[in-house]
Image (cartoon, rainbow, N blue to C red):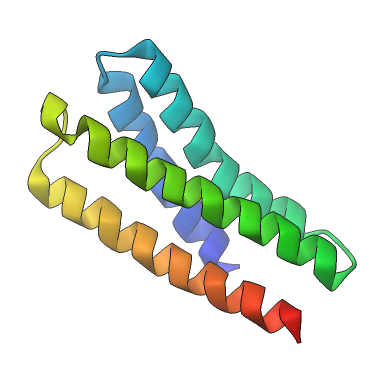
Length: 108
């Protein structure tokens, strides 16, 4: 599943940023939220009912938004460049759009 691969790649990037953060609390939250994305995609993919799959994809998308908010809040710490920030946002937007489509398709 392509969205799973993209989510894993984003987690790897955010894990590096989390390790560089000056706040252990923020670092831990970013690590857990970013890991939640591919884990919920995987768990949702293994579910049998559309309703179950949809719920896990919604959680994955919510975790993605949480990551964006954390990255936005720590941008000023200087642990990553504006170009890296833009790349993270671009990747998050792409994953969000894919998950949104998956969620909407499961409503039918």
